[in-house]
Image (cartoon, rainbow, N blue to C red; front, top):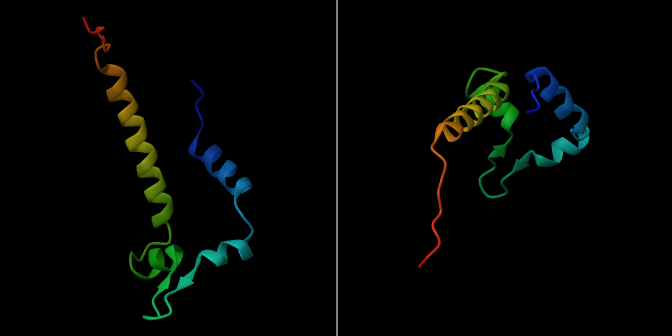
Length: 83
């Protein structure tokens, strides 16, 4: 099994990330309501925590790892052929 640190994952993510100009394309304003859809702004203004996206990412990793532990602890599945 290949183990990576969170730092390693973030470094890989940053290396693969698009340029800042390309990221701005994903900030959209609804024409009818004028509501701006921007996850980073949401994290700062609504959650009062600019680290919110990172914390959510960490939670997803934790849930994934715990799920893997549970699945590995399950008994082996035996599939019987139909008679």
